Every structure is written in C-alpha cells, then in structure tokens.
Image 1 (spheres, rainbow, N blue to C red):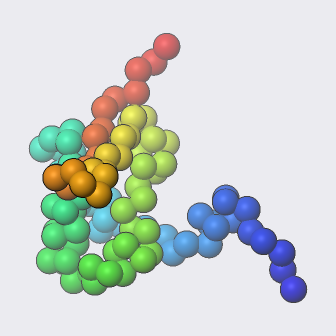
Image 2 (image 1 turned 45 degrees about the vertical axis):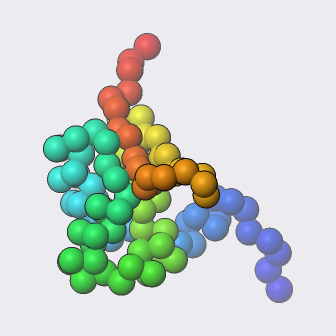
Length: 96
C-alpha cells in the first residue's frame, strides 16, 4: 500500500496541460499582459473543452510553465465579497 504523495508527486500525477491551453494563453498575452481567466475559459469552451474539466484537470495552472520560459506570472483572484474576475498578469523577468 503506497504512502502519502509529496506535493511534487501530486502535480506530476495530474494530466498534462493540453497544447490548446497554451495557444489560447499565448494569443491573449500577445494582446495584453493582463489575461482574464473567464476569457481563457470561454475560448477553451469554444474549442470544445468542458468547463468543469478545465478546472478539475487544473488546465489553467500554467504559471510554472511560463515562469520556466522567462515570465513573472501573478495570479489574482478576488475574495468572496469582491467584484471582478480572476486574472493572470505576465511580465518579463528582470535579469539581475
């Protein structure tokens, strides 16, 4: 019987993020460094993805992939009593 998984093992066990997700993010980042989560989800649904599966499969957890390519990525989500939608902000990493 296996023991508990580490956080890294949990992440590694998730399904891979489909390439179309990165295509949607890339097209939105090219237009603006501020990307609304609901716009990403809307575009993915238009491509045939299931809204619930987008979240259950963690398809929007793209931050580390973009950080590995030289971006600073900040995810912002309003708290329960705030208005607005969740968003990602992308900026170029500064070289020290």
